[in-house]
Length: 293
Image (tube, rainbow, N blue to C red):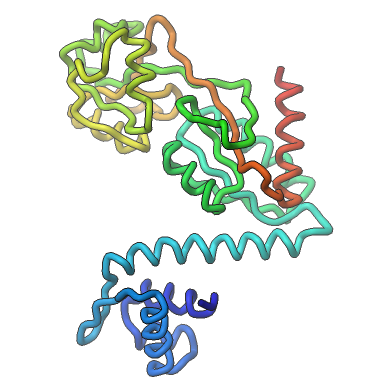
């Protein structure tokens, strides 16, 4: 399977039209159709449903499109980093959940870019489960995680910052009058919680009972959408502080009592050959942490 054919597939899958894709790729329509047919035969699956004018992806086609994007992104990153072997430059691919503490990471990168302007930073947002999958398949160099993660198969570095938990509620909610939230306050109210693995067990440790005993009406992997659910009074959100700006909204963040915090770590694959820019990032991160402490 050639990279050229993968690029052909990506364009066709994006355009959903063989004729348009052929024009973009500067190849003839019959030649492009033949390349796609050969690809399907090589894979042993049908990638497209062909209509009179447009084509759509099959279930196998959708899966293959996702993997094609990952493969081509990895190739582009590898080439970019190899061409910068004599200088510090290339791409840093970082995955992370939502956290106000990510400002420290971006401060380090900004300082690096002053000295090494040939750096490009790609950030992927998502929960830890999603980030670990991308780390394992090589599309991320680093993942920033927030508790709940088995780091035994990765290299990792504990970070000196943490996130504080609380409850995001509407300002007309009866709980909004409180300065802090106790575990008993969560009983009999609709809750929205993160769907990240082991979050429910972590929260259960603070609450003192299984989260299954509470009225969980929704889950989320990125907080912004959960905040919109809270605004519509679907439920109150158990989440980190500092991510949602509540100053000009109908929402209020109330911290938990006793205080509940989640530690941060940065992880990367064991026995991985890091690019020059990734090595420099780790070096600067350790210096930053040393000065911070």
